[in-house]
Every structure is written in structure tokens, then in C-alpha cells.
Length: 290
Image (cartoon, rainbow, N blue to C red; front, side, top):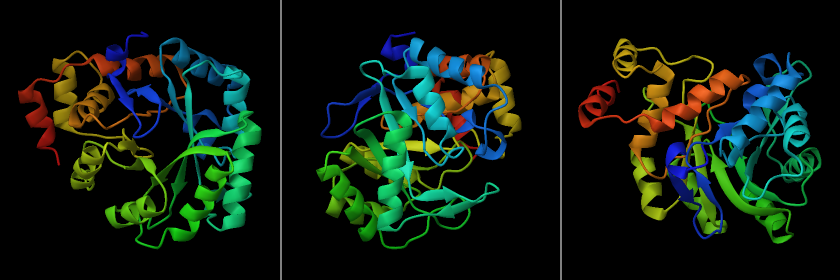
């Protein structure tokens, strides 16, 4: 499945030489339950990563506070030395408590430490893309300032430790503030078939050539459920989750997908979603779910 069209086509991050297939892979689920501790089946986690690359996936999203550290260590075990053309995108801005709780970690010292954690555990001298993850209410964005965090990462970029920057869990105002400080190549926010608060933002970013990468594209910890989605899936001889992924690929050409799984079979199902053709009538039915 190395043909880009079989993985949703291609996208080049703005003002970079990095081109990826639009159907990527998110490594969040490779660690243990609740994204904490070791996986139940580490060999299967390694197989999933290798299968994804063998299928042509060249956009792998990760984070060192998944586990923590464990997910990046599994990626290194499975794929290092990394194949040419594989883009690893990571994020900073969070940390885990001793029992798995999630906390913001956005001071300059914490961000510098997080970048070095990613470099060490991935076995890299420089990170392809680093998303600055901001924390708001629940999984949604806040509206606080971004200057200190983006400035800190931009300094690490100037030092050669980071190649490109992105932002995550942000609103339009914060994105513009970040772009005033450094080039931003991608935005990672919560978005899916029934959670479409970023509709206008996606158009805004598309006009600027910036990638939009939905997290929780299948609903995250609360999987998508809809009678219409199930009906459409049955008509297409597909699963509801495949239809939900295909809808995102049809939504806008700057949307890149990073669905996660710890199962080779589920990975294959996700990748196959890129080949689903949704007619205008089906798209209209799905669009009405909002």
C-alpha cells in the first residue's frame, strides 16, 4: 500500500521539504491502559509499528508522556534506525503523575526537559516536528497566552534540536499569536464527525497551507456512536469507524489523520478507510449529524 492515493493522498507541510501521506498513525495506544505503564503485549506493539511503515505510513504521531517514555521507547525498538521519509511528530507541554494523572508542564525548564526526553527515548539528534500542547478545560482549548512556550521552543529550533513547530489544543487567536513568533506547520485539535467546533478554523488553516490534525478522530475515550453512521457503514460494507475516518479525509485536503491502535488487524482496518469513496449523497447524510 505504498501508493499515496491508497493512503488518502499526500500533504507537504508549509515551507518544508516534509511530505507525508494523509493517513498516518498515532502511537498513543501503544502503552498500557489509560496510556500509562507498559503494554500488555509489547511484541504486538512492535508489530503494529512495523506493519504501518510496511504499508506506506510515513507520519507517526507520538509523545514522551505517553507511558510515560514507554511509547517512544517502543517506537525506537521497532523502527530505529528510522527509514528514509518517515516523519516523527511529537508533542510537549504535559506530564504524568505517579498514578497516571495528567498535568500541564509548560514552563521553559519543563519544555526543554521534555524535548530532551523525546530526543533520548526516540534516539534522535533532532525532532522533525514538535507540537506545543496547551491545556484548557477537559480536552478543549483555553485562551491563555502562548508567547513564553513558543519562544522557548523556537530557541530550541534555532539550536537545531527541533526542525519545525506545531501547536495543539488551541483557538484561532492563539495560532496567530504563535505564528507571529515562529513558523507553524500544523495544528492538532479535537475534531471528528460529531465534534466540529473547528469547522471555520480548518478553512482558515487550509488557506494558509497549514495542516490540521484531528486528535480523537474516532471519539477518543468515548467512541463515536450514531445510527446514521452505522447505516452508512453497512451500505458501504465498511465499519462505522472506517466511514468516520473517510469522512475526515473528504472534509478538507489539509486534514491529516493519525488514528491509533495497538492491534495489527485494527491498523489494517484504519488504513483501508482511506480507500472508501463517499458519494455526495452519503456526505450530506453524514454532514447532517452535526
